[in-house]
Length: 331
Image (cartoon, rainbow, N blue to C red; front, side, top):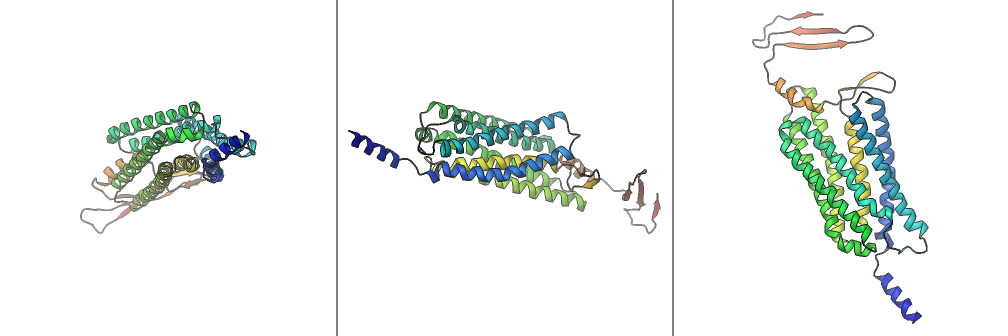
C-alpha cells in the first residue's frame, strides 16, 4: 500500500510541468520588471519636478497608477518567495496563493488605466473621434471584467493545473482584447498625428518624433500582448504567459509616464532654467494645421530674448503675395 501510494505520487509529479516553465518564468519576469522599475521611478521623479503645475486630477492619476503598480510588484515578489523559498522542499505545491490569484486583476487594472490615458489623448487631439473612444471604453470594461472572472476562478479552483485548463479561454480573451485596444489606439494616434502636419518644418519635425514614439511604445505593448496570447494558447499548463505579463504591465506604466513628461514645448529643469524639451501640445495640432492653411501676410517673429527684462521681439515685414523687394524691421 505505501509502495502504491509512492508510485501514484511519482506519476502525479511527472504530469506536472517543470519548474522552468512555471515559477521559473515568473521569476525571470520579476527580474526584468524590477530592472524596468528603476526606469519607472526615474520617470515619476521627473514628473514631480517638471510638472508641478499640473491639475490635481492628473497628479491623482499618476499617484494612483504608481500605488497600484507598487502593489502589483509586491504581489509578484511574494509569489516568488512563497513558491521558491517558503515551499522550497515542496516546489510542486500548485495550490493558488492569494498573491498569484490577484495577479490577473492587478495586471488588468494597470493596463486599463494606461490604455484609458491614451484613449483620452486621442479624444483630445480630435474630438470627432468620440465614437471610437466610446468603443475603446467598452472594450476596456470588458477587459477588466474578464480579468475579474479569471481572479475569481483562481480563488475557487483547487490548484493551478485545473485553473489553467478551465480558464484558458478567459485568460486568452483578456490578452486578445488588450491587443486589439493597443493596436487600435496606436493606429489612430499615428493617423491623427500625420494629418496634423503643417507647413512649418519645426512643427513637422516634432510631430514626426511623436509619431515614432507612439509607434515604438505601441509596438512594445502589442508585442508583449501577442506573446502572452501565443504562450497561453500553445502552453496553457505553463506560466510563461504570466512572466511576460509582468513585464508588459511595467512597460504600460513607463509609456504613460514618458508621455506625461513629453508634453509641453518648454519645461523647467532641475536648476530652474527654462529649456526646450522638443515636444508639442497635442490638442493644438489640429488648430495649428488649420492656421497653416490660412493666408500668410508676411509677419514672422525672428527672435525672442528674455534675460531678466521684457522680451524684445524682432519682426520682419514682407509682401508674400508679389515678393516686393522692400523689407522693414522694427523692434
